[in-house]
Image 1 (cartoon, rainbow, N blue to C red):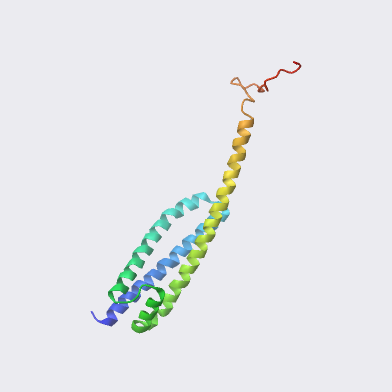
Image 2 (cartoon, rainbow, N blue to C red):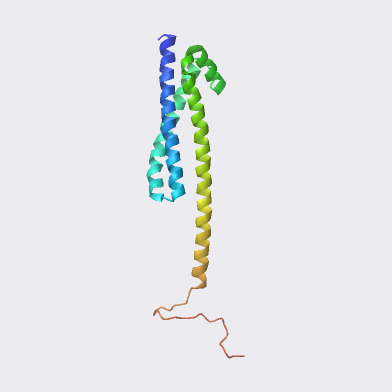
Length: 159
């Protein structure tokens, strides 16, 4: 294969990676909206889509790393930029899009994590209140359904 064909293959995989990142960012933004709205059913539905998207992103990123190593380029951002400038200068905007999408993905994911932690704390606090209330009202009704007040250990009017 000639150098141009190898570069064209690399660039097409880079475009696929960019497109996969766009899909993943959209999924994270949808997840964020579902978290804000408290739509747990939508969160469950999104989880399998997110898993598939992550698997696809990992596959594409590993292929990119393999391609770069094969062509003697560094795997770091600067190495990719240098290689693209030398071999496929027109694809630099695609690489810049990828870098921006990764930053956006990290920000949205961090925000989603904060939302999840906040909701988790709220749910734990609500559960603690309910458990305490259940403990304090335990025994108010007997097995026959009639009110039954637990004794405090001392009968009223006794000394």
